[in-house]
Length: 207
Ligand SMILES: [Zn+2]
Image 1 (cartoon, rainbow, N blue to C red):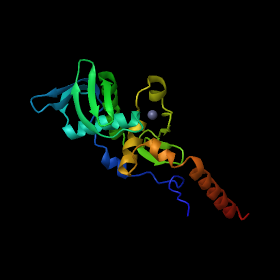
Image 2: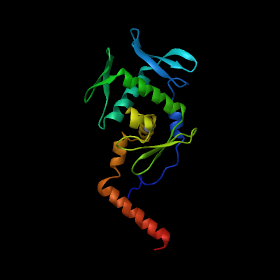
Image 3: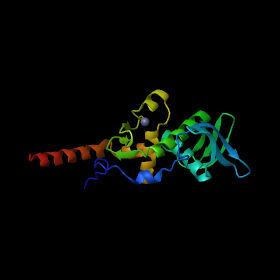
Image 4: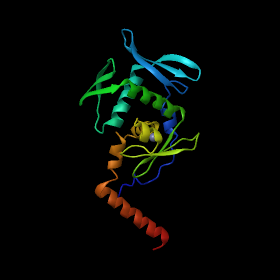
């Protein structure tokens, strides 16, 4: 039997909405990131429509954000062992190597992570991409192996909120990354799936 998981269109999931929690319940523009005290608790300083403010992030939450960033960038990324803040960014020691994320990159990422949660972006997987819908504005963007169709990704070359929503959705459904998910739909398997689809379509048409 052919496994049609990648073809079958899933309904927009409500599951994601409850799973991404915003860092701050308002749109934010991050000014700085610090590790505070002996416990080295991550703290972000930011501007919102209401003014300037700061908040602490749990270490687990911050680690998850770093992991999400690196997993979207790297196809085969495993585990973070440790990290420390330098003058221009974050040094990360991972199981499969060392990484460096500049402050401007991580600020942009956290702002978009927050936005993905606030906008309650909905993800639908197709065989070749992830379709991300903003239920408030009614806009749609498509994420694939190369990137995203939105202006943020195309012009600013940042990781966009659609990629973040897609990645977190895939993870909550047991996939490591979008690349891993899409790989299931290429090559021989994919051809078989297309043939099955064609058969079904013929049958539906009474041919
Ligand atoms: Zn996008």
